[in-house]
Length: 196
Image 1 (tube, helix red, strand yellow):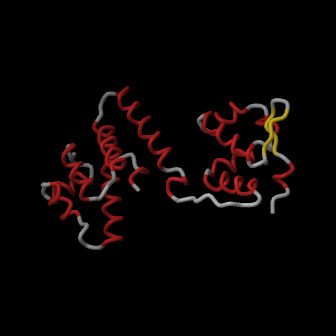
Image 2: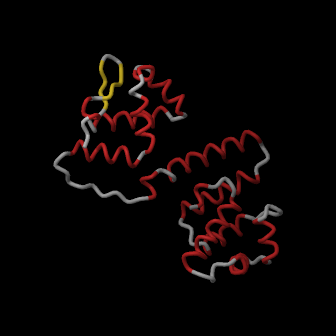
Image 3: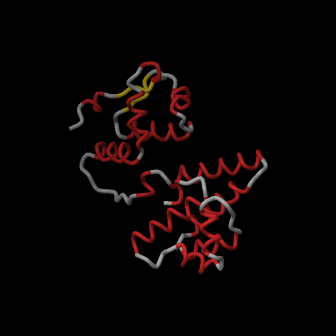
């Protein structure tokens, strides 16, 4: 998956290797070089960090590597980040990369989850919350510590979470019935300790 990379070169190498494993020998550096209209030695140098591609080469590579539109856009974003020399723009590009990675590397984007009709909706909501967002288990555990029960903002900072993400987790845990707001504090409920 190209979204885990900060380098367009690493993303290209990873995707090429993934396709070679899945589909066989037709996905080689030589075949990619031919598709892009460059020499294999030049492509090898680029992938080793001793050269750069241009946006047209990236477009042709994305076609060959069967990237969807979001993956192709991310590849171009990585390319811009690597080529950028202006510190403020580079920081802005890194922020954009991290936002895309944050949305694309979440568990629910990698697996398909179907809603299931469950007589005990609370347990279903809890399972969905805890298994689709690994932060939910950490947040739930943190609220068992009195220091964090009344300092949600401090907890977000300590965990390095965006406050909005933490609020979403808290709301989901409340819907699941394992967290409740009482007197300005977020407290785990007895239901948490009675789960099967």
